[in-house]
Image 1 (cartoon, helix red, strand yellow):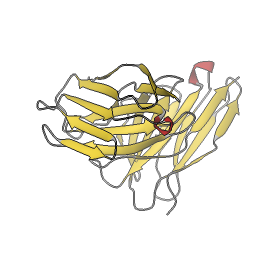
Image 2: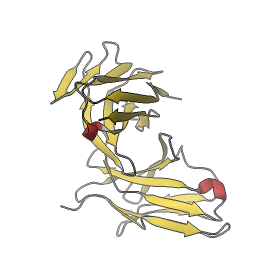
Image 3: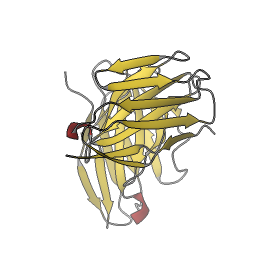
Image 4: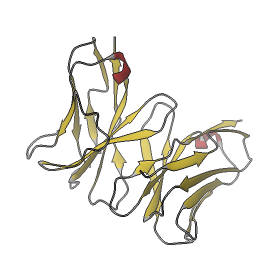
Length: 110
Length: 113
């Protein structure tokens, strides 16, 4: 079945440093979504990417979808303590269910 | 505009009891999904429902687990004869269509003692 791998599992940075998490799928994806879950909270939808090679930005966050539609990345520029949480990618092949990666837990040292 | 409502937030059950988890999707959302999350783990798909229909239950254990989304009322995830391994956070999500982002509820933290 479809698998979504995400690395790294944990990332600790100093405030102001950049952060990147990577997502790889075993199958070609029709779209990929990114979510953020704060400690003790629930996942919150950030963005969806659909087109091959697509790049989207939300303030300090940059999301990319690979040309082959099998990988994606989330890059945060100049991290802040408010960025703390676990970032999940979730991919879908066709109309199948959304499969989540295991997430990257980000901690930021002030 | 209320979000996805889940209750209870916390549920403690003894081994062998039944657990009932409720989820009311966002207004206008007809697609409901249940996910399970263990500590420090990702979200594992359980079931996808629309009103009165189970669309995909490939992530549901074959025994003791069932889900429904009746014509009226919330979606229910039922776990019969709970065991310690069922302890987890259960999240419900909804969307207006299948290809949209999901809105998650705050989850139900189930503890089996």
